[in-house]
Length: 315
Image: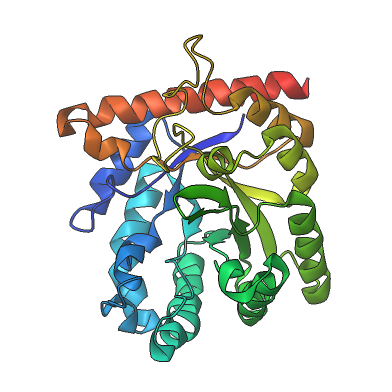
């Protein structure tokens, strides 16, 4: 049976991380997506505001996260994947800001990932197509960043996972970086061949895919073994809401907004063996705190249902 996981944001708190990981275990989760991006917020970075969290040395970061690592281990929760802070490059940002994100935040994120014995770290590609004129030139910038990180990832036994993104232009949602599965597969293979290691993989984000109108089954089937991680959440096809799967419908006939059947077919086609990991932190702030355990348990139950359907598809 596939592992069931969820992001740690709004569950695991720095003051008492053990309590949060115990809550995940009691809810029925076996693994977690550690929200490292919560320590350097994208909303701040787009305003060129940077806190001092990653000014810490690697040793100081390990000391800071030791209670988190111990709490996860004692609760029996595996940190399966981690989200690097993003963006890694701010268009129009000051050179010193982008240098800091590239040369300090990203390498130290890999160090934290290795400290947790976590095999996968999710990164966002650069959103630069509108500035550079093409997706190919955009990828060249992202590829340079990945080439910078790849030797460090290889040394630490980590696979960097690029993620399908969307872009908002003139009030419209369009495909963003990594929305072409064929290109993504070719690029992943090329980099892994170059480094003779699995330094690059893919994280499929269901919410972003729904916004961009991607064909779930075809996309996942094309990715095949390159799929290493998932961000599972739902939306109305208009905004990136990160809500509970099956929460939205497109028609009065109550057809789901998101193609969950195609999602299951795709995972079954490739015999996916990773974690079904939910990226639904906003849900935990929309419900009262008293209902947080019930909401987490419901998410885990949805995960088990999806896992069962994937198993049936394989058979």
